[in-house]
Image (cartoon, rainbow, N blue to C red; front, side, top):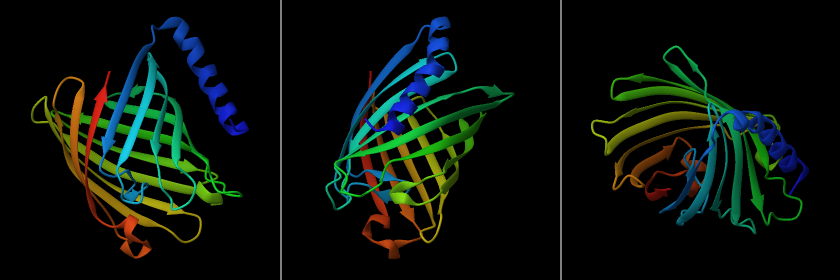
Length: 226
């Protein structure tokens, strides 16, 4: 465990500890597979399948969790693990999500500096069976040693039935130096059971010139929660 990971874990425990004493914590676990791991429009598995899983704990408005997935960056890096914590207050009809995330990678090449933090601010508003929202993520020390980065998006979803949901998002990734791009996705989710969901989604970016992993793709995923 790196020093930054240890500091993040300590901060998450410091936040969750007092809340857990007042609220009964609830736990949720997830496991899933996908035909590709796409993060902000870019394949993280070199267009190969993904296996992922995670665990979450919540108490009142506070939450924390861990999530992991295989990755393939064309080097020795083979696993991503994410740690995150935050709280979800409401402001009138607006549901907020304010938190911090840590992205860690195992078996990095010698001299690589892939791990980084992001701070998250998100909000959403219900409109009957639909929801519209926006979110932003800021990193003061981004992936691979980039000084800072900002990702922001608008998104929406519509659920005509309890089993079917349609959703879409339009986002912009900005980094210090070259590498900015716009990404979007649209898809449909279907609840096979109360604990098993299927998602079919189309992803694309405006920078196909950056390489195949930035190209358009359809991804199907299956996720179980328990």
